[in-house]
Amino acid sequence: MAVLALAAALAAALLYGAGTVLQAIGARHRRPVTYGIGLGLDGLGFASSLVALHRLPLFVVEAAIASSVAVTALLAVLVLRARLGAVERAALVAVVLGLVALAASAQEGASTPLGAPAELALLGAVVPVAVLGLLGWRRPPTEASGLVLALVAGLGFGGTGIAGRALSLGDPWWSTVTSPVLWALAAYGVVSLVAFGLALQRAATTAVAAVTFVVETLVPTAVGLIWLGDRVRGGLAWAAALGLALTLAGCLVLARYASLEDDPDLPDA
Image: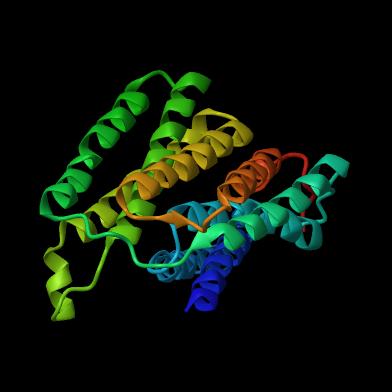
């Protein structure tokens, strides 16, 4: 089961990374089919992340999802003929080593049940996140307001991960439709996607991606370790911390590859 969950987490990274490149090609050359396929891969990546979250701690899955930027960077080299410098190549190595350390240090297992009050609190927390996004959107379209929206996107993506980790199928399965966690999953997903798109219209891609990656990784990591029963293998807390640091550092260096639609430095395919 651990192997399957790890494979699902890596598959999510690959699917998200490939989806970004296809969306870039579709947007640049006005190819709606290509763009649509990219969105489809994003959907499959989301489904794969849910499979991984069922058995793996949030700090592993969220770091793997953030590492999709490394996949995007590699595909940008192969497909869009982008060029990676020595620093970017070192960042790719850091991401790989970080993910290996995280995978080795994680204790597999289902999450701790939240209970009805906590589930409602998770759903209710969507409201202040959405309000912060609304305030950022209503501000003048500056770099600062773009970073506020990036923060909201990170909180939204993080909330999606937390809800995905906490979600459990009811018996019968269709009773899950009434679960506050399922509705939180959907609400955080909508807020994050809208906020991320608006943030990219106001601030530099690198800055938006950096803020989003950090928040969507660190916040769920803390929540998972404190409330959801996520565990690190005995004696390997240092490996988990080092792996998280390496993965995030590498992702931040590669952050400009998070959105390639209008990057002037990349040649046409």
